[in-house]
Length: 174
Image (cartoon, rainbow, N blue to C red; front, side, top):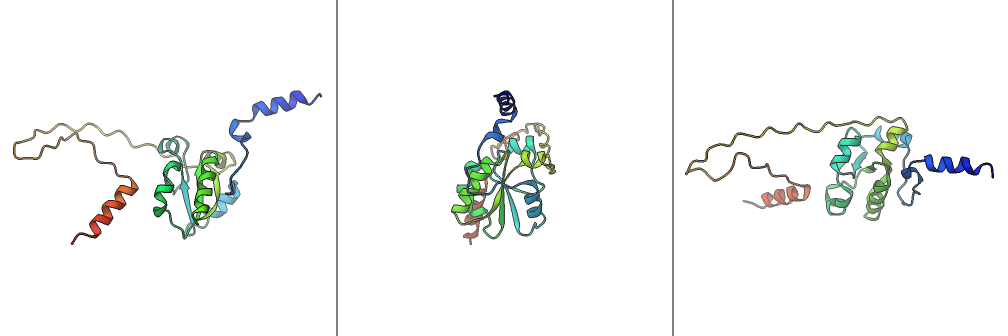
């Protein structure tokens, strides 16, 4: 009975992410396992499945492929099957779910890790500063003979699928 207050104090002091049970087929990797895999860069692919704002805020590994967890199934053709894959999220749970998906699709998955967990275990995470905001370009006068394009038109943003479609369309042109 005298240990109940101690147990309650410990249970409430542990962050919520640490209380989540690991329920994935994909192995949850520890720092030493990740470091051993990263020492073989020609055999490994680090797949970061977080949103860009999370990667910017929390950092990631020096080199990685970024595909958000919600988009992985649609982007499988861009993920190589000849590499051992480490999936990454903040605390490995999304990475574990993506690892399970990749395993089911025939990919070689070494395991899942969380960038915050890896860092808490003494690993080094790189933080990338977002690019500075572009200054607004001055609006150019449009002459009657020039096309109607504003100098302040936003640049097109292409995702991987759009880029692949554009490249395949170019390949069939004479």
